[in-house]
Length: 558
Image (cartoon, rainbow, N blue to C red; front, top):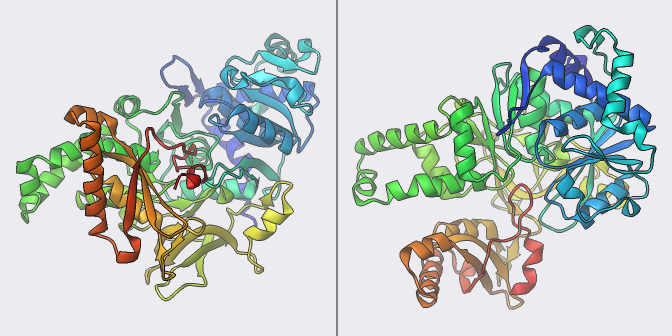
C-alpha cells in the first residue's frame, strides 16, 4: 500500500522549498551560517550538476558521513531528488566499518568530513568515483578529472544553466514514485552485525506524514538537532519532517553534552525536543536529584497536597531549562530509566516515549503527551500507518513484537537470508523485542529477545529491568547484567567517578558501596533474578550512536 499523492516524498520538498523560499531552513549552531529554503535549494541544484558531471545515474548510491551540518542536509536531499539512493553513514563508525559499508552498498560518490576521511584512501573503495569534503566541498580524492568537480567549476556551470538566477519557478525535482528506494541505512545495533536497511521513499514519507498530521511539526517549528542525522530517529523528525513543514532547524555538530544542549535550548527555545534517554537522564541526575534528596524537599514530597507545590516548581524549572516553549519532549532510541520516567510523570512534565527501529525509518508506536500517554509505555501504533501485535505470547502476555505498515523496509541490502529471517511467513516484521499490549492498545517493551536470560528453572529474566534498578543506586553511572555458565548473574558496574571523587571515597569504600547496592537491588528482585557478583568496570561502556550499550563486546567478561 502506497501513501496518497499528497505524501509523495519528493513532491513534499518541492512544495515546501517553493512555499518557504525566503524563510530560514537550517542553521549550523555556533556559526554564522544560516541558509534559507531558497539558498538550500541552490546548493541542491549545484550538487545535481556535480552528480551529472561525475556520471552518477538514477539509483546509483551516494554516501554521506560526517557531523550534523547544512552540507550534510543538502547532500541527503540532493541525492534523493536527483533519483539516486542515499547511504547515510554514522560519523561514529570506525574507518574499517565505513569502508565496508561503502563497498557493500556499491557507493559511487562519497561526501565525508575531513576528520572521518583520516585513515581511508581511494584504493580501499575502488567503486567510488570521487570523494568530496563535507566541510567545504573541496575534492579530497578523485578517480575523475578534478577540474570537473571543483567548487569553482560547478559554480560556473550553475551560472551557465541559470543565467537569470535560480528562483522558485526554476525548482523542479525529478519525478519519483514512493515505491522507489530512497535510502540504505546501515544499522548500529548492540549485536555487532551491521545490515543495510533498504527503505523505500514510502517509509520515509510515512514518518513525515505522521509528523505533519499529528501537529508535532509545523511551519513555526524550531528544532535543536543534536541526534545524528545518519540515524533514522533524528533524520525523520529533526530533519525531514521539519523541512517538509517549513520549519527551522539548528544543527548541533559538537558532542551533545548537557551544558552545550542547555545553552542551545535557552537560546533557540525549541518547539519540540527529540532526545535519547541518556541525555534526559544525565540532566535529571544533575538538576533534579540533588534537589529532591535534600531533607526538607524529600519530606515534603511525601506529604499529600504539599508535594504538588514542590512538583509544580520542579516542573517549571525543568521546562525553562529546555527553553520554556516546547510542546513536549519525545524520548526514543532506548528504554528510559523507570525511576526517571515515574518522577517526570509525577510532576506532569510534558514527555512521551516512542518506539521504533531503523527498519521502520523508525517510528512504530507513539502517543502524544496531551493524548494521554501512559507511564512505562511507548504508546499505540501509528493510526492508519502501522500495525503491531504480539507473537506467541506467554501466560503473562509477553512475546515478540511484530509490526507491518507504511514505514517498513523492503529488506536488507544484498542479504536475502537476513531478510527472510526478519519477516514472518505472513509478512510481519520481527522486531526482536519482547513486549506486551494492554487492553487500551498501549505497547510495553520488556527487553530484547536476544538479551533475555533464563533462570535456573527456566524463568525469563529481563536484564534491562535489573540494570535500571542498579543505575538508580548511589555512585553508579551505568551497568550491564550478564550471565555465567552456571546461570549466576554478574553485574558489571561503571562507577560515577565524579560522584565518587566529590565524596572522597577510597577504592575499598567504593567496593563496599557497590556491595550495598547489590544487596539493595536484590531486595527488590525475585530469587531467580538475584545478582551474585559485582565487578567494577573502569570506564563507560561502548555504545551505539543512539546510546545503547554494545552488549556483545562484554559477554566474555563474566
